[in-house]
Amino acid sequence: MKFVPKKLPLVFFQRETIQVARDLIGLQLCVRSNDGSVRQGRIVEVEAYIGVEDPACHTYLHRRTSRTEAMYLSGGHSYVYLIYGMHNCFNVVTAGEGEPEAVLIRALELEDPHDRAAAGPGKLCRHLGLTREDSGLLLEGPRIWICESDHRPLVIASAERVGVDYAGDAAFWPLRFFDEGSAAVSRR
DNA sequence: GGCCCGATCGTCT
DNA sequence: GACGATCGGGCCA
Image (cartoon, rainbow, N blue to C red; front, side, top):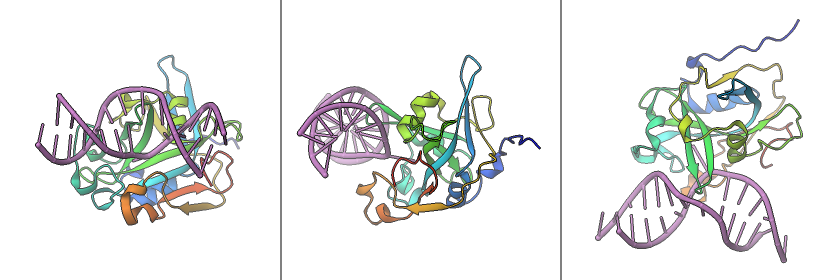
């Protein structure tokens, strides 16, 4: 019987952030371009950013600016920001409205599992064509959505988050999750 | 207005 | 392992 991918409902994202992060591993992130073509990849690496008490999170201590406004939306919206003046990072907003938490999508496995064109948060945005224009969108299409996959990860590993040395103890929190069996993970 | 620095990546040694 | 690119965000004045 053929596997028919099913689009995830918004309630999937409106749960506890760490649980959503783990559950996202193995699912398909899909983006439709203006010309109608769809680019997609299997999520193999994510990081949880758990809100106002997380010193690594953009909304630490309720920081709220035009950039982070999308994080205050209800779970199931996108949050895309520019980093180092040249790379975009795509996040899935989690939990409820006014609970500014999110999951950073760090790597996708493409059709060729050894293709590393989407192995990193900046690289996957470039590959999918995602920019800050795509921040604050609902993840129920037509532009961006996430659907089920018939390829579930065998082992989900956890580790420290990348690039958050400024965050004190929080730099050591094991909030990065990845598919141990994928060659498309950004770092081991 | 000014200053510092970043949830990265590619290149070079 | 080190470093530069490149520019907006965040914070202070």
